[in-house]
Amino acid sequence: MLKPHQLAAELEARLGDPTDPDQLFSYENCAGLDARDEFPAAICDQLDGLGLSTYYVPPQYGGALQNYEDLFQLLRTVARRDMTVAVAHGAAYVDAVPTWIAAAPPLALRLGVELVRGHRAERRFRGGGVGDALDMASSPPDPIGPPVAAASPAGYVLTGTTPAAPRTRGGLTGLLARTGDDLMEMSMFLVETERAQLAPPARLHGIRGTDHGSLTLHDTEVAATDLIGTEGSGVELAMKSRQLTWIVDAAVSLGGIDQVLRLALDRVIEDTVYDLRLVDLPQVRRRLTEAYADLLAAEAVALVATRSVQVSTDELAVVGPAATVFLRDRADDLIRLAAELTTDEGRVGKALRDHQTAGAVSGGVRVLRSLAGQLPLLVRTYGQPAPLAPAAALTTDLPELRADQLQLLSRNGSSLMNGLPVAVAELESLANAGVVSHQLAGSAEVVLSVANDLHCQLADAIDPTVALELGKRYSLCFAASACLQVWLRNYADHPKDDLWTGGVWLEACLVRLLGLMRVPPAGLAETVQIAYGRLMPAMVQQLRSGRLLSLFPYPLSEESRP
Image (cartoon, rainbow, N blue to C red; front, top):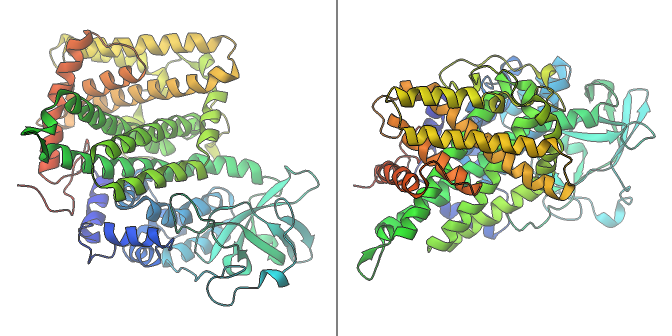
């Protein structure tokens, strides 16, 4: 088992069976917290005790964040149980990223020690809540706009209110403040959380109980050494940080898929209607197999994207948005499907609310616009020679992250997409050698044709109203390329795995992705029936054996089925 999946399996086992109400991190307990809009403090403390916070901190600052795939798989495990907990706990990582990128080592070490220790402060809400919260009537009115940082002999004096966002309960928090006359002259600071007042959290539709609110500072003095990076670099730093924080979004989406797809399968495979098993109904069987293919494709995309953090750092401006758009769309569709197929309205309804709200809070539309805005640049780089997708070779060691390589735009486009022609040719060679079917190779050729046509469209002037749809189509081509590369770089390591042998999962994923693009695969209906027919037994076997539905399954804490 690969190390990231081994870490996830160990965390899963130590958290216990989530269907057992006596377990702290159980579905029942999370439902109760959601109903009360209560922060999952005890569960977050449990995760800290199990060492999750150490994976938010790079090793040079006392943590274990050597591989961003480790972080992704651990947060995916948390999100599979409850997306709210993943967002609430992962907020500490999101908040810390600017410090890892640009802070002076002493400041970063200070935050690292705080996170590894795992201490969570009790919240003091302005205008009510716990403890000695200040009465709003006695507080000066909040300034409009971001906080202002005025120079002082000791450093800066911060005054103002931040925008609402999920907040960490750690002892230190990062925030943007204006350090010049221009609104864009922003700087990032690391301040002690207890020196700011948190407005009572907003009552959100989903991810209820997370500390989603604004911070207010009144003449708060901070030292010059609390400045993260250089003065005036705050906006750029925030944008670069986003290229590392989308990992939390990806984990939330895939974890949500993990949870609801299993619920739907449990019902459909076990239940009957008029003495017929639901799974034997052709339309239901087809839709479930498509959903499993969606899950496997989403997993392949997430693996390549998270490994690209360290392998192709200068391409994250494209990789992050493309992966996020694909994962969010697939998760939304699969959660809705589960709502149609399962009777567990509580868990599925909560998953739907949580995922939709998490996407809105983290700026789902902005992510798509970011990808669409780069499409003209991607046209100019498409077709350039590219390495053999090192991010997809899952057994190779990853280099250390070089944060100085983060770019606001990917000047070289996407090496994953640029390598698509070579990957398709490689698959054709394997088909000629009898390793995979010619139908699979033909479907890969169709994917390449779609990608070529898409880039021809992008070469023309793009109407803004069309750009977003083209961005979504690009994310589907990106996903197909990720699936191809993951299978090509790793199939030799799985000679006895029915899911990998002959490209079973790859063919189903390509057929599914072409269907989402409304393009028929090679062989038309025959290819679709064969691809899904070969995939179904692997899905049922993973489900009945109590293992994670995955390219790399491991035992789950729920009771295994006979």
